[in-house]
Length: 109
Image 1 (cartoon, one colour):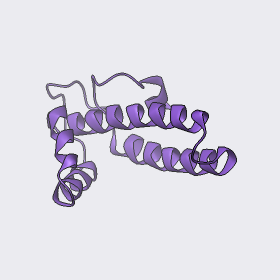
Image 2 (image 1 turned 90 degrees about the vertical axis):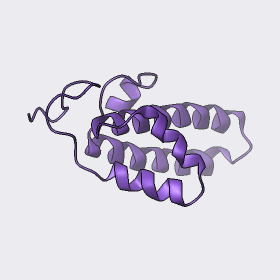
Image 3 (image 1 turned 180 degrees about the horizontal axis):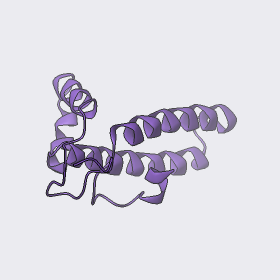
Image 4 (image 1 turned 90 degrees about the horizontal axis):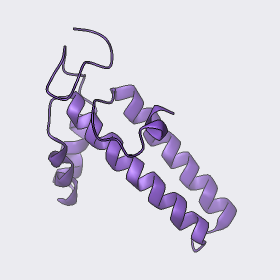
């Protein structure tokens, strides 16, 4: 729910668990919405847009948590290599202490 509260916020940091729980939640919501409304519904497109925006913002905050600039999210546009690199970074543990993007969301210094 934290990601939905911060849907348009790219400031700060997102813990690894926040990112991965959100990813699973988005996947499940997408499956259910597509099953209920079908792929061509306007409702599906609106929900997809909202979920895509939230996915980008949590991805950027996750990169901030490991000390990387949010611009590294753009490497995902490089097929395969970019995706692998982003997944590797998303699996990394939080940078300890405070970094330039804020305090450690785990509360560990």
